[in-house]
Image (cartoon, rainbow, N blue to C red):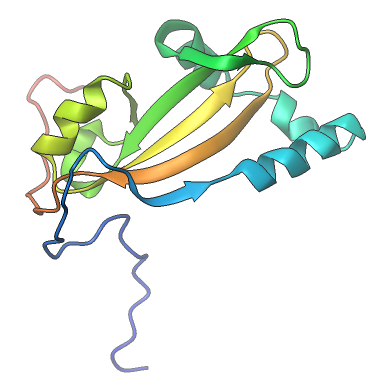
Length: 153
């Protein structure tokens, strides 16, 4: 069909976007309802995939996670860790990396737009669930970062 492409939609727009505050989250998606449904399924014995955290996610939670401020809803023994990932075309090879919450403020001024994903993880029972996603940035599109010379393939 003419004019139709099979290209996947971009995570962030490539056109300039008027942004009042680069630190203010926009296009926010809360996964609270999905989380509640997953918890109900686990309690019924049907949602075991939420208790099988990837080893890399568990490692990220151990070394880079931040306290979520609430106990695990499954084992109720330990406070959840919160792991924050950033994705975006402008980030180049750094897209998909874990970032500390306080690093997001600097990134919001350095990039036009990038999507932030927040995952809660229990290191004891391996409960994990995506809780929130949103876009940060100043709205001015930039060229993607280049590949560093010392980046291994």
